[in-house]
Structure formats: structure tokens, C-alpha cells
Image (cartoon, rainbow, N blue to C red; front, side, top):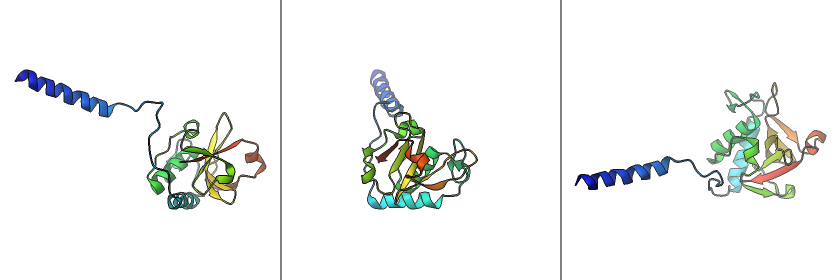
Length: 157
């Protein structure tokens, strides 16, 4: 009897340990593709945060935002999706799309093979981003000479 109880407890402990383990780093969390309505909500929400102060590591309107913190906050609040926290990780988030296919709510990542910045595409060649220390969340154009030189990649979750 004690042996059966011990075996059951061991099995339960192994099951719970499996639930608490970290996901394999080579696997991305599965989620459904965002609908056009969710993508539109993401863009609208991002536009509503224009003017929020920049803060390195910030991820709320109260604390301020860095670029990936802004993306994470907007995606979570507008679509219930939690993107990776760093720009380097965002390059594998969702699927790669051509710039000509970009729609509101898609991500734009700058820096080519060494990504350093990201924003939320809001249509008509514009994106919302948290640019730098001392700055504020703002709306910029992709055809701005500075951003054109940075190597732009688009991702659609």
C-alpha cells in the first residue's frame, strides 16, 4: 500500500515538474495569426501612445517605453499576444513579409543582420516607435532618410 502511494506521489511530482519546466529555446510559442481587426486595434492603440516618454526598459505608459516595451504593451493589451521582450528576439516573431504586403499592426525592425530598433507599422508608410533616451513615443515615416538607411524588415505575427 505504501509502495503504491509512493509511486503515485512520484508520478504526480514528475508531472508537476514537467509543467513547471521552461519551454525549449528552439521552439516559439504557438498562437493564431492576428485578424485584420486585431491588427487595426494594435495600430490605433500605438497611435494613442504617441507622446509617452521614452525610458530604457520601460513597458507601461506610467513608466515610459523603450521600443520593444512599447510593442509588448500594445500587442498584449490590444490582441492578448505577448511578443518577445528584445529587438533581437523580435526578428523571429511571426513571419517575414515583404514591405509591399505590410498592413497596420505589423512590426518593422531596423538594422538588417544586427537589429537595433523596432516599431509598429500604422499604414501609409508610417510607424510608431519609442526612439531614444530623452525622447517620446512618436510617429515617423519609413521613407525618412535616416530610417531608409537602416535596413527595414517586416514581420507579421
